[in-house]
Structure formats: C-alpha cells, structure tokens
Length: 217
Image (cartoon, rainbow, N blue to C red; front, side, top):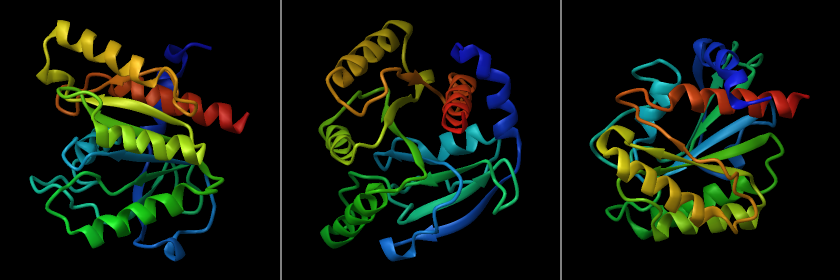
C-alpha cells in the first residue's frame, strides 16, 4: 500500500480523543508496557510542542513556550481511546541542546532518554524533529547515534516548512536524506512539516497510521 492509502486512517486516528496520562522524570517512573508508543525528540526550540498540537488538532495538548527547555520529563498521551483502551501513546521527550540548563539537569535528561529507549518493547518509532531552516546539526547527529546504538527505528521530521523558499526546501530534504543514508536504524523517508500552515501534517498522520497497521498486522 502507498502512504496515500493511509490518509483517511491517519485523519481518523488523530481526530480521536487524546489525553495526558503520565509523566516520568526517571526510569523507575515509566508506565507499564501497554499500547504501541511513538516518541517525539528534537532540539529545545525545534517546535515540538506546536507540531504535537497540530497533529492532534489541539491548541494546548503540549505546552508551547517561548522559553526552550520546558519539557523536563517524558510526557505520555493516550490517543484514539480512553486511557487504558487507547490505540497509541504519544511520548513527548525532553528537548536537547538547551545551553541554559545546568549540566546536572542535562545529564539527568540524557539518562532518562537512554533508559526509556533501552528495551522499550512498546516503542514503535522515534520521530526526530529537525529545524528545516538549519538542517541536521551535530546535536541531531548525537541523537541519531543514540538511536542507532539502541536499535530503535527513527524517522526525521523537518519543521518550519513555511519559513523556507521552494528551492531551499528541496535542498534541505536532499541534504537530510543523504545524512541518513548509512544509518542502520533510520527510516529513509523525510517528511517536511509546518505547524503554522499545516503542510505535511496529513502525510505525517498517514505515516503513523501505516506504522500502526504494520505493527498490528
């Protein structure tokens, strides 16, 4: 099946209820294994909260702030059903690369992410958000390294599509695709999105619906 075939299932999936259910600040606080999970990672100012809100057609599911580094734990959301009967869980991971946060806090966040990624059987894929205006940076490469080492499937989602010209968009997609070519755990397709214009949101939802269908097959 093509990605287009999953447009309607994707729309319906994200049109369903979505509720905050759990927050984990350390590995011992992680919720029990349940429905499939998809996690969202990215630099602190990449627009992760805005994209989560756009995906779920909500304005306040994830906090949007002008101050990077607001997500300081793993936040779990139940999607497509009441908590306990949901079809999917969304996991908002702490943003990385925020220099104003102390080294101890950064180390704590890094350990939390490593612990979560290690052997989490319900984790279907990590979506790594990369700022489309800047492309893949060393901190993003470090996240790719961690995911490759953890053998966790991941896919890059470019953000801020509306802030680039057409030629620039093509260039950044090509450069991002090339950066992922030899990475063993990377899913090869890059999706370019905008939380403001809605560009790529339907495609993103379709990709998630396809992933869920393949996992449940």
